[in-house]
Each structure stands twice: as structure tokens, then as C-alpha cells.
Length: 482
Image 1: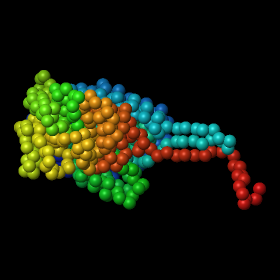
Image 2: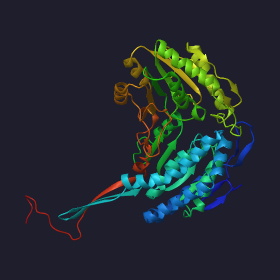
Image 3: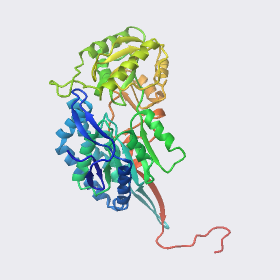
Image 4: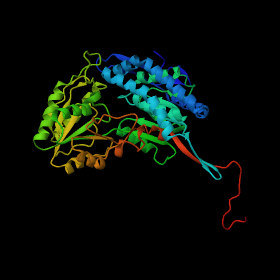
């Protein structure tokens, strides 16, 4: 195993607190090492700052070539990447392989997005030309989450590097091995020393990173609480780029015109994929009172009982694996208990075995419940009388990341698409269906209105608008001598 940190193009041992990551099913140690000290973080920021001028000035073709080399390395080591992701956070093998494929595909998509959204343009003018160019910000801090430890930080890192920024990357302390693999792949791709630096550790490392004087931007994916703290920390500092993706309390409306069994399948993909550990997972199922709503709930319960849940090593493969650790599973239990205490009625109780949690459904119609994201396979059911009430319930949240409607009624979709407040909004597709070739983000507490994925190019560079004349010429104007 490599040493703990990658700073200035060299691997070295961390001088901070020792920690380890564990397989959530077996408890086996996956990675063990030391986090970064404040001095290590300072060194990483200094290395990134020193590397910035040369990297920003490098031809775009060189930056693209290195990114393409990175994609080939990840593709060659795809099995190792997928196994590391599964071992560290419990993701089912097929799901982890899909994440690695998304990492590879992200390169071509980011190159296309950079050209389209942050490229160059020249318009001839009588005086010469009006041009548009884009320039990098500087040193960007990238904070990776545990649920997609490769794909989500990759979605920040690749556009930032293509734009000419340099990076200090802090993976989640729950998935340090996945972060180390990414740094290894960039090193092998020929990224110059100091352009990408890896620091491991927990909250203290992140705090030191955010306080660094060389910082130009923060690219963050994680909880709303942490994202809001970062936003508060940089209040009054508009010079710092903040791209914050912070999850959602996502609604899914199922309405007549849909087949109940098909709806149940789409509900399962929406609510329970990746053990419910996707920020785009549906958290609230909204159905009408009456026979149709009853049928959808009954079909969802029947399907949920049949979902195969187990460790990533299980054969045949499970639909989903454990949560990232037993503490996360206990958080689901506590959330469920709180809903019941408030008056919600359990339909299918969560069954918990260590970090494994079976799907749970609970009806919270008419109950005052917290507008919080439960990061696990727990789905609240809300019954309503009308479409007006369904849309109102869907919008009754501070978040605005994802949402969806399942129905064969095109007029309903048209109305929902105009009135439901969400940045990712799907019709007869899971709420978890998000394409890297489209923007990803939403209003409210779901982020800072800097969507990622295809729109990451927007926050990775700033536009420079220029009027260019090769020789100075006096401009006539009233009141000036001719």
C-alpha cells in the first residue's frame, strides 16, 4: 500500500491522526494510515499554488491528453477500482462497476462540456475583434463523499483540471483507499507534480484546508449541514468559488395511468438503489387516496420484501449492500423511530443486521415530520386527494435536488415539470437517473446554485470578454477635440 498522502508529486506518510477504513459487512480493515497534519495541508496548498502558473499556461491539448490517459488507466484498473469501492462503502459489485464506468466516461463528456460552455470565441469587429476566453481560478479544494468516492469527486476534479486549476483533494475519511487510487491514476497519467495533491483525514483536515490562504474555490459534495457550515464560513468572501451539492428530501409522485407493478419497480430504483445512499434517492412517495394508491403501496411492499440485500461478495449479486457502517444503519433506525413517535404508521419496518438494512416504508400522511434527508433505504408514504395537493406536498421542502412523476398522463407531466421545484426532474424514470451529460444540482438547501456534471465547466473557470485592436486609434465623441 502507498504511503498516506500525495503532495507535490511525491507520496509520503501523514503526520496527523491515525485512522482506518473498514468493510462495512465484515469489519475488515481496507486502508490504514495517518491523516494530514496542519503542516501537511499547508504543504499541499503550497505545492498546488506553485504548480498553478505552469498548468494554467499549458496548452489545452496537453491537459486533455493527460485526462484521456487517466481514463485509460482507470479503465485498465476498473476491477481494482470497483472492488475497492465495494470493500470500503459496501456498494454492490454491479453498482460499483457502474460507478467506475461513469468515471471513465466523464472524461469525454467533460472535454465536450468545456469546449461548449467554457471555450473561446472570436467575432470580427471594425476595430479588430471581440473575443471570449475562460481562465482558471487557482487552487481548488475538492471534498469527496463516501457514497460515490470515485465518480463524484471525479466530476469536480476533471473539469477543474481541464480548465487549468490545481487541486487539493480530500476524500471522505470513510473511503480513503478509493481516493488514493484516484491519485495514483493521475500520477500514472503524467500529471505534473503539484497539480493534484491528496490529503487524507477527517474534519480537522477539512477545516485546515478551508482556512488556507491560497484557496480560490471549494468544490464540495456532502451533507446539507456541512455544506451550510462551509457557506457560512465564506460569507462576505465573494472571491471564493463555492460549488456545493448537499442532497435532498426528494419527492416521487405516482398517479393513475401507471401500472402498479411497474411503478413499484421504479419506486424501488428511486428509493433503495445504493442502499438509499444516493442524494437523488426518493425519500417521499406521494400517491392518491383510494384504490390506486393502495395498489401502488401493496405492490411496493411486495417488491421490497423480495429485494435481495447482502454483502458485495454475495452470489448472485444483491440489489444493494450494506450502508457505509453500522452507525449509518442506526441513524435509519433512529429516524424511523422518531417518525413513529410523531404519529407516522409503519407499513414495512426496517430490519437491521449490523450495517445491512432492509427496505422500509412508513406512512406519514398528515403528520408533522422533519424536513430532513434520511440517508438510507427508508421511504415515507404520503396520501393526497388531488394533483394540487400532490404538487404542494412535493414542494413542501427546503431542498430541491430531485423529483419525479410516474404516470401515463402527459398533461400531468407538463404541469409537474413546470411547478415542481427540483433541478433533476424525471418522468417515468427513477429519481436516481441522472446523466453526466446533463447538469446536476438544484435550488434551495440542495446546493449553491452551481450545478455540477455537464455544468461543472461553468464554475471551473471565469469568462474573460475582450475588445481587441492591434493598434491604438482615437475614438471620436461629442465634446472631445477632433
